[in-house]
Image (tube, rainbow, N blue to C red):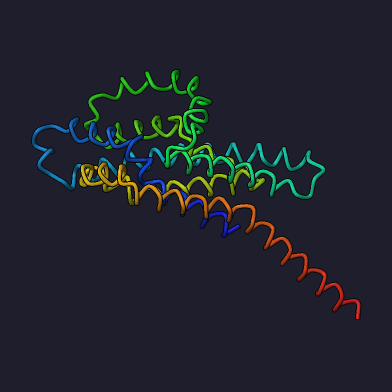
Amino acid sequence: MLVTFIIAFNLGLVSTAHCVGMCGGILTTLMLGSPDDEKKSKLKVFKRSVAYNLGRISSYSIGGLFAGLLGSQFLGLSQSSNAHVILQSLAALVLIGLALNILGFSPLNNITEAIGMKLWKKIQPLGKHLYPINSHRRALLFGMLWGWLPCGLVYSALLLSLSTGTAYQGMLTMMFFGIGTLPGMLTIGYFSDYLNRLKTNIKFRWITASLMILIAISLPASTVYFSKHHDHDGSSMSSHQHH
């Protein structure tokens, strides 16, 4: 299962370009919401950004918990021994579609993000009560709300959580995904202009898309590999005990 956590972390890590577009403006709002005497303090702005991201990752983890719980029900009802691989293959297909979307070849991102729009329309108005975001508590709560923003990459990670088959592992999968997004998200406020230019750089987009496709391929491939390795070890041990 450690492999799944590593894959989830790497997925979050390569999502920087996407996160800049989705959440860059929010972190700018966090800074503009600071009192005048705090705008001069980069440390206070950074702390507020950390609080926001902790809230966001908390919501991811809650989503992962429910996804893993749902996955346990699916795997329990499924008669297929390849149910894990099927779920991870679905996550891989979504991820490949998102990679193609980054390159301008697929509308999948718009389609997947439309799925959660109904829920988001109910959650989004709650954020108005937190303005101005001038405290760590408000930043944390705002991050928890923003964690439910419709996002194709998050949905792909949730499918990965679904494939774990347990609530605990599903939660950890989303937590590792969220941690992977931290480096990009924590630097957006300081390097937003550079990151926005980087997002439109065709070479960077190709590199990001290629890494996402490699991660997508590794999802079902790793499960198949370790499953066969486990079966081989089990059969060898059984044979040895028989002798």
